[in-house]
Amino acid sequence: MSDDLIVRRPEGLYCPAGDFFIDPWRKVDRALITHAHADHARTGSAHYLCAAPGAGVLRARLGGISLQTLAYGEALRIGEVTVSFHPAGHVLGSAQVRVEHQGQVWVVSGDYKTQPDPTCTPFEPVRCHCFITECTFGLPIYRWRPSHEVMAEVNQWWQGNGAAGRPSLLLGYSFGKAQRLLAGLDPSIGPIVVHGAVEPLNEAYRAEGVALPATLRMAEVKDKRLYQQALVVAPPGAARGPLARTLAQASDAMASGWMQLRGARKRAGVDRGFVLSDHADWPGLVQAIGATGAERVIVTHGQEDVLVRWLQEQGLQASAMATDYGGEAANDVALVTEAPASQAASETHDTADSPSPGSPHSSSQHSP
Ligand SMILES: [Zn+2]
Ligand SMILES: [Zn+2]
Image (cartoon, rainbow, N blue to C red; front, side, top):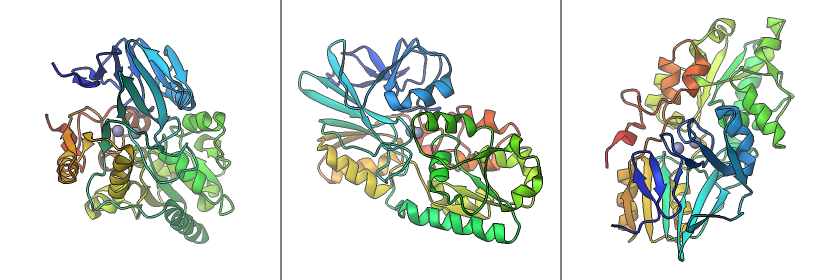
C-alpha cells in the first residue's frame, strides 16, 4: 500500500485520508472542484466544494447543486486532512487544491496560467512536497507573448474590419476565454455583441465584480447594419451554426493557444488566429513547478511524456497520471471544423472522450 495522499481511482483523483475526490469524472459523494470547465466539473455528485469566487460560474453550469465554498486560503478539516483553495489564474474562481496530512502537503493544480488576467485572481505558487500539475501546453514550442500585445492586435483587426464595413467574428471558449477577450477589447471601436452561450457566464462574472465592457446579445440586435462595425464574441462551435448566415460577410478569427500551430490554424479555417491561452506555456509550467519546491511532480492531461522526462533530467521524481481531463482547451479547434449546428450544446458537451484525429491533445488518452 502506498501512503500517497492522492491516488487515481476509476472515479477520479481520490484522497483516501479525507475520503473525497478532486474534479472526479464520475459521480461521487464529495467532489472538490478546481474550476467550472466541463471536463473538471461534472454533474451528478452529491456534494460539491469550491473556491468562493467560482460559485456563480459553477452554478451557471451545473444548476442546483449542493455546494459549499471556501475563501481562497481558508482551511477546512475533512476527515484526517486539512484542505484549502489557492488561486490558479485560469478562469474566474479557479483554484489549486492544497491537501495536508501529518506534515505532508500535496497540491492539485487543476488548470492554471501564470500570465496576468484582469478577469481572475492571479496564480499563486503553493509550497508542497508533491505537485500534481496539468500540462496542456507542455512542449517547449509553446511560449505566449504578453496578452496586452495580443489584445492590441485583436483591436487593430476589429478596427480594420469596421473601417471596411465588415463584421468581426471572434471565436473563443464561452467560459473564461470569452470574458478575457471582452475585458481586453476597446469599446470605443464599435458595438460588442455576444452569442447566447456567452451571456450567462458574463452575468456570473459581473456578479462577482469583474469589469466587462457593455455588451449586446445577438437577439437584441434589431438592425443588422449594426454588425458592420461590431465585434461578435462567440464559442468556436457557433461558427457552423445559424450565426454563420447572419455573419456571412464577417472576417473571422479564433483566440486559442493552439493558434500557435500552423496545422491548427489551417484546420480551424479562420482568417486570423490569435495566440491567447488560459493555460501556462512551457516557461510558465517550468516556473510554476519550480516555485512549489516540490521534490515529486505528477503530470496530467497534456504532453505528459516530454514534461516528465524534462523534470526527471532536473533531478525531480516525476511521473504521469492518466486522467479524463482535457475537453475544453483540447478541442476548440475541432469545434470549429467538426461542430454540429447546435453550437452551445456541442460546446458544453464533454468532448474529452472523443478527440478529433490529429488533435494536438490526443495524448490525454494514454493509459498509465
Ligand atoms: Zn480549464
Ligand atoms: Zn484541464
